[in-house]
Image (cartoon, rainbow, N blue to C red; front, side, top):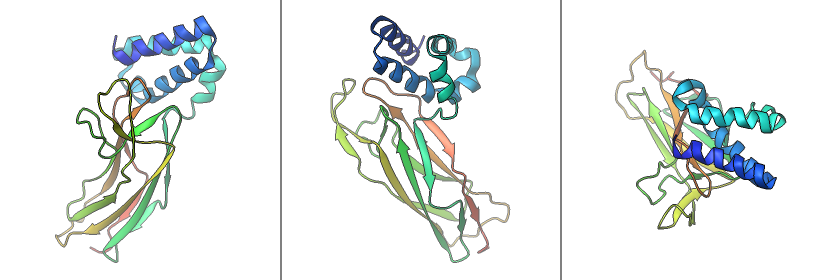
Length: 204
């Protein structure tokens, strides 16, 4: 059993003992954050799979309502297409963060934590410049110093531009979002998503 799966069972135990919906909400949020890993790793996360089965028996309506939105973060993009025919293009990525979760800021102030970042991949001849908000400093029981976090809603402003080097004709650049979601007592595994944005290299 891993720490997060044990916490999921503890929260379900607390809900069963007290009837306090706050414990159930935190259990649902924790299981949601591992939705992708549970699907891909299967029996490799047996203890957390057992927590999912418990949740399904304790609160089947809650599980059904959560199926459509397993991530603690909802993305809003300023565009789904970036045209580099003029040499550069802009993109804004707004992160809507569900309570009780927060994301580590780009520079959280703790090397053990994964900061939020955008990454340009498979893109020789291109560069990505991002403006990251500094985040808000908060203290948590699991850290001995304040950590900078993103809560609620935060916008990352990015500019993609050509470096002047030759861009291969078969290049298929992708923009990846990396983040780690935590609540007041535990952190989910770092997540990575490809943004649904098409980068058109018509400047070639």
